[in-house]
Image (tube, rainbow, N blue to C red; front, top):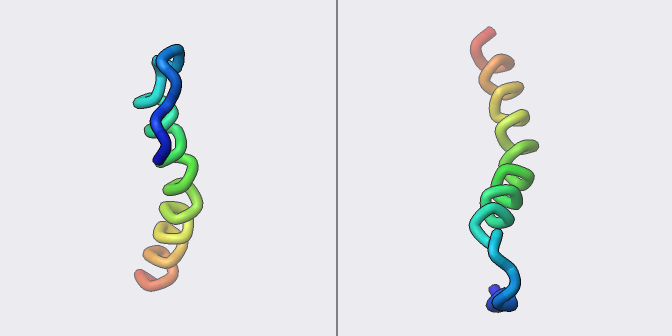
Length: 39
């Protein structure tokens, strides 16, 4: 990843938000598959 400019103070928050946004659909699919396999 490219370095952020000095004025950018919320790199950790952006990284956390991007991770949550990326994991959201995967977690939803995982829950659906787990319920489907449990029946």
